[in-house]
Image 1: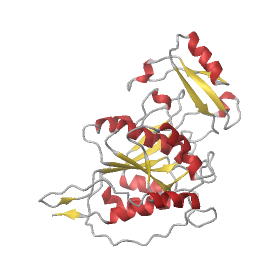
Image 2 (image 1 turned 60 degrees about the vertical axis):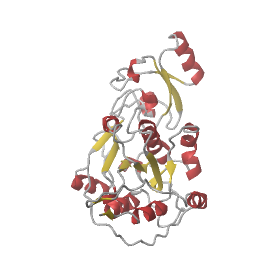
Image 3 (image 1 turned 180 degrees about the vertical axis):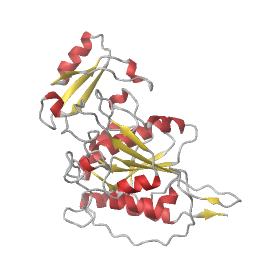
Image 4 (image 1 turned 135 degrees about the vertical axis):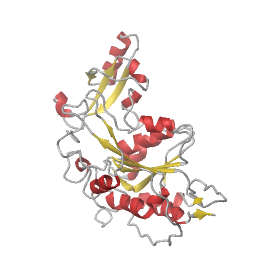
Length: 325
């Protein structure tokens, strides 16, 4: 959705967050954070940079009472801010600062029954890990599709042995086996109350992922190991020649779908700043540091890295943006 540009001059709001100690260190480390610079024009125009907001998987099954709840946050446990989902923080971005986002994008985990990532599909225990060997390399292209069930192995060694027998063709994917979740038609795939109504009212475009029975997809852009694209890929690909200056990623879960979506955006849009706002996420891991550990390892050495910016710092900067005449 392209949001309308409204009048600026918003008064700076007092924001008090009950942030955990480990996250306070991050808060102190980004005092010099500056959103993308604003362009000017002699005619009246929006001075806001070209910015996208990506809302990742804010769905019933990922919240309290869901089949795969991810409810940990950067807030101190027991505080009123440590809600079971990030809708309240997301609502601030949408309703108070919606004009700062040129495009608002929603992703949705949307699995068929007996999905490859479900422990029940394989008769395994939830949260166990297996290795899936996909012998076909053709799916690496954006128009490629995984069309067959991969071979499942208990160890990477066994999967590698099978790959060597196939002249080292194909791809091995490390797969966590999850409880059944976000199954099409189950109700758990629905957006949480409040957010669901907002998506419908504003007629936001929803980009689904994880629809292929044979391939998992944490990222809204690519499936596992980039074996095939997800629904959001064409939008991102089309933006290469005129990319957004910033892409803000929030939602559930920080350590999986948010991180992989943000990482793929940083790869596909190397000239865009990719920012995750931790307060507007929830995660599976016990702590923020644990939730971002794998992403930090994967993106080490890359030129365009995902940034983590505290919400108060980000909103303070948005408050300084307005119109240029």
